[in-house]
Image (tube, rainbow, N blue to C red; front, side):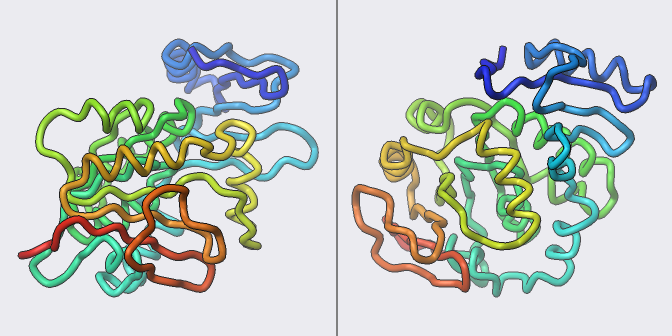
Length: 260
């Protein structure tokens, strides 16, 4: 069951009676009530899948995971391929497609980019609501002819990332990618909408140093941490170098060279 702070009341609702069985399914899985009158957030089920909607007169639009259309499709088709900074950060090169664990998966955008470039991805999301959105997006992506081979390379794990990494079973990831929550200052409407929705549910990541330590203990080749460009490094070991973009940067913690 999801713990609901007094200031963050969440319920599940069907946008059409046709989707009532799915709404009941998600309500039972997540331990959330069906539609109530005083909710602040609604996990809605409709013809576009699962979406999270903040309620109230000034609320932004809903957030859902969509790997088939919108921004994910545009980036897949026109995003720059292996020349993208995130690709360079995780070590993608000719003949090199590392196994990557995204331990702070969120809506899966970065993991989808890496999977579209050929990386085998594991994703961990600890917030159950966001994990539900991600699970739904992966399921719908698997039904699309072009996207299905990409999401087939994305394995979703749920739970606390530090615990999952500390108790990892099987072959360890070569690269671990971290994007801890940080007070974002980007001006785009999309970031504002997602942050307005998620910050009351997720908050910041005060355990980021422990997250980094667990990642460094598990990854065989490198750890990559995405940060706002002017933000300090995570407390702990210092990165060997960073790749800087316009609004963010990638701190690189190498352990061993990636080879074809």
